[in-house]
Image (cartoon, rainbow, N blue to C red; front, top):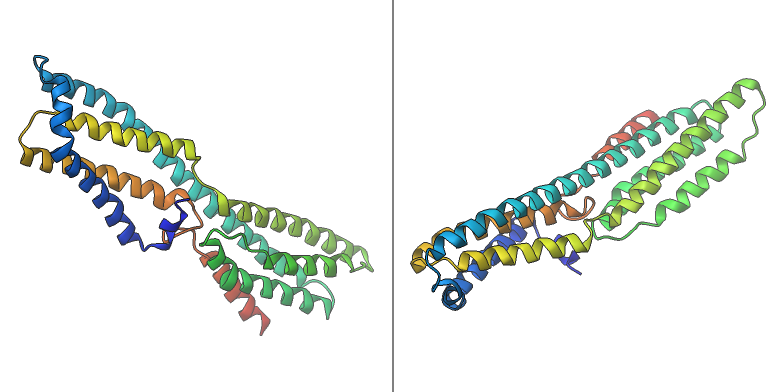
Length: 263
């Protein structure tokens, strides 16, 4: 339900999340901190105890944030690899089609160029909105039907046809993986743990007995960093959505090659 954040420019999203954490902390430092301090003020060395608890909690929470950030980056990298593999398979398929007799060769390559253009111009904007594009299926089906209708007349054509079908299956597999990646994200339960941990972190800091300005400055810096980490994970959470997303550059290079090769 938070997918609307990917419609916001990165700098605005970073300012909103980081600034929101700082404002929440400052609000709690004014209105909640005096109440929370009463829970530990009667204990001797309360600041030391709170400091020990915060350092122990910080170790576990820091590890959690680091692991989730790595998981988000790995998702991004894997989707980027899938997109590159599909573009490479598409380029290889286009090359294989050159070996077919005319006019079939020209027709097959025209369908592939049309598919590549569709992915760049129409599919990618839809993916960035979280919509799985369906228009490519029509073009892939048309190509497959034309390919299956061909009947080899020699052993050479049989070898070429078998290799082209193998390359098509590889391309089709990569395409399905890219479409599935449109909805790839970190499980909601992990976000729940991250947010609860951030709240607990702020509550522990509110328990420190210190001057208000010191509370504002030190706690504000901690909150700013927490918000920045949240922004980093959120921005990379969906590899095909938002400003920090896998681009269509691989397909654009293949399409340029196809157009140069057509003339």
